[in-house]
Amino acid sequence: MRALGLGAACLMLAGCATSSLVLLPDDEGHQGSVAVLEADGQASQSVISQGNSRTKLGEANANPQPLGEKGLKPEEAALLTTLPPPAKSFTLYFDQGTTTPTVESQSVLTALRAEIASRSGPQVEVTGHTDTVGSEEDNDRLSLQRAEEILNWLAGQGIDRSLMLASGRGERDLKEPSIDNFSSATNRRVEVIVR
Amino acid sequence: MVRIPIAIGLTALMIASPAFAEIARVKQSSGTAFVQRNDQQLKPAPGLQLLAGDRLVTGKDGRMSLTFVDNTRFAVGPNSSIAVSEFQYDKTRQKGSFVTQVDRGSLAVSSGKIAKSDRDAMKVRTPNTLLGVRGTKFIVEVPE
Image (cartoon, rainbow over all chains, first blue to last red; front, side, top):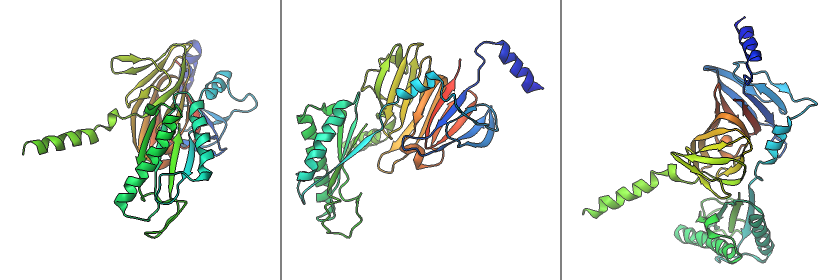
């Protein structure tokens, strides 16, 4: 009865619409979920996991409805088109003990530069790594030098330095697990994330 | 003898102030839109760095989009008032906590690494609901 009364009050008052959630698959087509932890001040254990659904919020038992043939509202579709592009990763490889990218990595550099230039308000995270040949201290230094080498190259190509940050992880994050003093072309790398 | 504690004090200060670290960058905005930081209203030009506690505000023709340092992406629709009340991220461990409060308007989210790191590490609060985000894309709408 009380719920009915509230519903009637909402019908009479303009702008009394309730909050809602539209759940969608992510860009890779994977469907995650959203849990309702609290509704109207009460703890809840509802989990919304149906993709392409709409749920009225504020009820302890979430009741998702399929979007159906009508799909998204025009303003929802418009909102989604303004999401920024996903972050993109690039990996450059290095000759042993050097800060020189391999010949194969040259084309990756070109693609990286183009990706940064194409973005609005970009942020670039450049992280250097080494293999396990040499001491940890030397590798910390070398990994940072590799990252700085890439950052400097990008700066030389006209990318603003303030958009970029270089750091070195030495031999702490091996791509290919290995024993100490093991030469690995896979581990000698710089990873760049463009946001 | 006096210098050492001062040096330690400064180092501790630098480490203990992650609240002033960049959490996101504005990608685009249009119409009436600003970032409210304490009593300042900042123009959301592309590249503006956001801090934890910032509020994203748009008018009836306003929009704003941003990407966080954990790869979470936001699109803010018209007539919105949305606060990033909490944001902590450890880049090395790829873990953190993230609380967004949607007081009014619409927000599209594509979640990033924080949502993946621990169950309900990313939360979204609306006036009547607290949501735990478990890795996905969604839209929250809060009418006026």
